[in-house]
Length: 255
Ligand SMILES: [Ca+2]
Image 1 (tube, protein in one colour):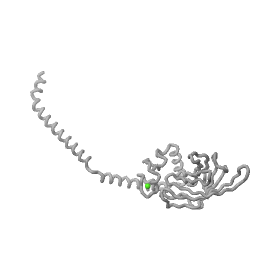
Image 2: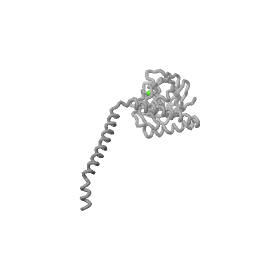
Image 3: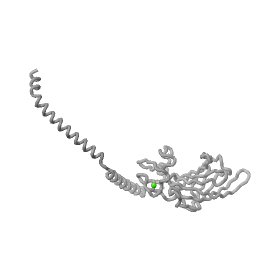
Image 4: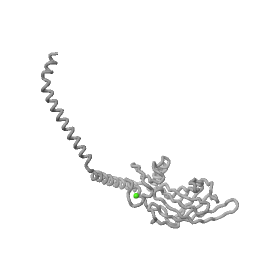
């Protein structure tokens, strides 16, 4: 009890000191809060631009580093690794819509297909402007082998298409116009025949796919999709108007 009364006797002074300390602490808190509010209300567009610039510079350095590493590795192995990666992505899904391009890398991002190869960097990693050369040239011949065919009139086991012209300047830079000649030898059980049909289509830089419009009145269109790494092989699909795939072929470049 004695100790308790001594403490009680000294308490007015202690309370004054504590009060002053609380006042000081409160003042510091208020000042810090005001500083935070002032920072938050200031225009920091310039700061964000600087960070963006730095990120761009770092990304460019990283891309150069990747190129240097790739240049030291056997190019065929790089293509095989990229093809495998494309296969995995195809199985897992890109996470983007059908009209989107997946920027890839460690920073997944979707941008519209029409923005690919339009001359403006839309992907943070610049992937949408990285590969803007048509991987086909006049004279290329692709030979297709049937996987299944439930719809074509002639049911060819093998047929070819030869690229006859490429035009890169189109209304949309994301596409190149492609002309080809489809050649097939067939035996429909009654007669052996030979057909040659001119094809016109578009190659999409975003999907690495060339889509030919239907050359005949059966309205069957043909597309051939590359995996984005190996441009000597594409998966051909014949589709009905409804979009259903009714025939599939694997095409490989002969020359
Ligand atoms: Ca772009």
